[in-house]
Image 1 (cartoon, helix red, strand yellow):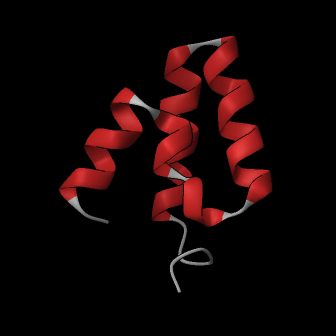
Image 2 (cartoon, one colour):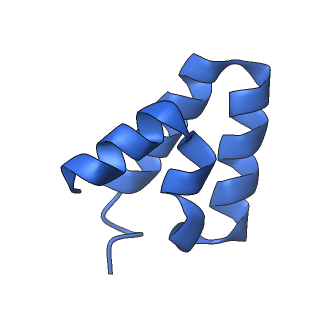
Length: 54
């Protein structure tokens, strides 16, 4: 995970997981709408998950 991805996930969480699939984008977008902090946490978790890092 690069510094740019981390900064993008802090400021615009749905854009940080754009290449991780439609489900990830939907989950992060809904969590960001519900509250900014849950969206950031979800984006960071998805970016750190080894299953998505191919």
